[in-house]
Length: 135
Image (cartoon, rainbow, N blue to C red):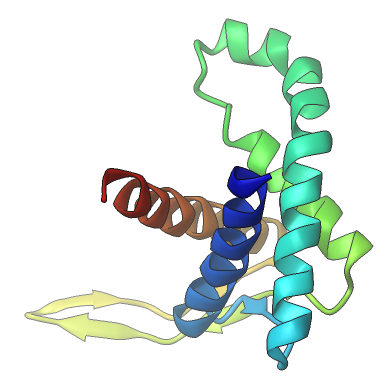
């Protein structure tokens, strides 16, 4: 129970942090709704993700685990469908110029936006989970 509660809080916090720097993730405004989104995300992670991983097992075996991240994308898609206040949107990234290098303006459509949001949420979650378990 303690690990489930910690996972809910960490998922809610991860959603909050990622929404702060990633324009494709729109989260609920209130703290209660954010914690509710974290709870739903955690439940789907615990209940549905093992089934998705089992269905993707042949692809994972063929690619030697290269496509394991697809399960996280499906979890995020299901969460955004179950809890519509958590939305992933397409967006246009601004042009970036630094030290003579120019990255042009990019249009990130919906599917790559789900992939990027899933990557950032997993990264932030795992980072804070490591920090909390080591102390």
